[in-house]
Amino acid sequence: MERAARRRRVASADRLRTGEIPRTKDYRRDGRMRINFRSTMVALLAVTLACVLSVGAMGAKAPVTLSFWPSSNPQEIEFAKIIVKAWNDAHPDIQVKMEPLPASRSTEEVLLAAIAAGTTPDICANIYPGAISQYIAGKGLYPHDTLPGFYDFIYARTPKDVVDAFTYKDGHVYQIPWKGNPIMLAYNVKLLRANGIDPKSLATYSGFLAAAERMVKDLDGDGRPDQWLYAPTVDVTWWQRLFDFYTLYIGASGGKTLLSGGKVDFENDAAEQVFAFLQTIFKKGLCPKGAMIGDAFLSGKIGSTITGPWSVPYYDQNAPEGFEYDFVPIPVPDGVQGPVITFGDPKNIGIFANSKHPLEAWEFVKFIMSRENDLLWLKITSQPPYRRGIAKDPLFVGYFEKNPMMATFVEQGVYTRGVDDSKYLIEIFDTISKQYDLCCVQGRKAPKAAVRDAAQAVRDILAGW
Image 1 (cartoon, helix red, strand yellow):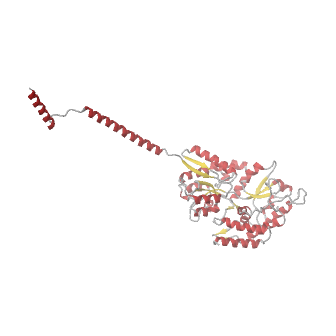
Image 2 (cartoon, rainbow, N blue to C red):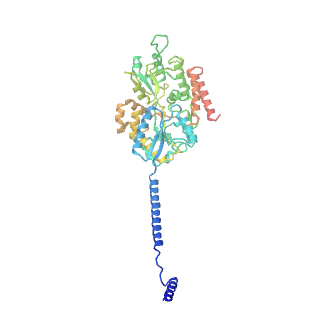
Image 3 (cartoon, rainbow, N blue to C red):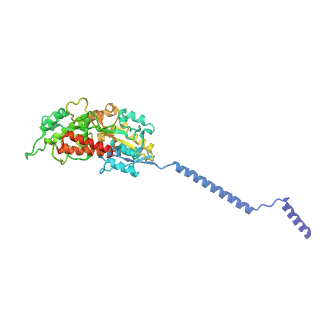
């Protein structure tokens, strides 16, 4: 029997080896396989979930942040704070960080340095047209006309001739027309009335000089005059000429600027008349001999001053009780016909070429220049925006009814000129300022000679000498 049992086991082993009898399952090994399978599936699900979460995180991008540099003027900073908060509250995905330009340096110096260093903001709201060529030479500004819907938006807001005036010679628009500040003559209503002077008589050089002679008085009896009609500055800093010689030259010439086609265009009778007019004021003692302390206009020491609309909120906040003022066009030489043209002191908005978010920046610029924000701008700064038909726009009518002086500036704004676009602009005005000092302040040079020498010096500057 033992032999028979052994034969059966051997036969079974042979049959198992040949596959005739299936092997018995190894339940321990099968269990391990099932555990490994479940672990693999869990790992795969974890990886899949991680990928989904990663894609979701990529979709929920951090908000875009735009840098915005407004002017350091207190009213403009106030406006900027209001619109930036309104924008940020309504656009959590596009946040604007506002940083005013430093007050200690000119905007042109700051922006040129930033362009050179590659540290410009996305947007600046204090672009001076006279420095555009320098900004472009440094590849600093974005060609705004390539932005989507640019011309549709800008022509709906701004007269075409204004847009054309700020279009660069290559056909691109590197500055977005924003606001202009027509320069006019402010006068002390009560002081002129007390001296028997009609403000309309200030319209011509002869009338202005006659009124100036009448206004000179020694009020305290110390033998020295302490009241005048006008006090042209003795400061020879280049930009001061924008508000005396240059403003008066635009008016005297019927709207000329200093250059035409890149060449000198101010060696003419108009420039000589301006120098002669200012020289007469100094030479005849019709103005103070030096700089005056404090605000000579608000203190009643002078009866008029050449200024812009930004003075309205300043006067309203700082004038003594009972002080009355108004504005008339700048004086022009006798015989000049037609509307008086003046310096417009424009400032525009620019998006910079190194902005990583030009489309988002463009949306914010359109927000700045909306009808509602143009009205807010007017209310805070008293600076007229370049807005088509603003005086008759129903949204603005109430403002002008309450602020009739601003309506005067808007009317004058049609008759303004800017400055020439030249990389030598500061040197040009420096040259004119030197001749202003020699001819007008010191009286050491005749007007014709002063204009001639200034013109020749500017020709040398333009030639690169």
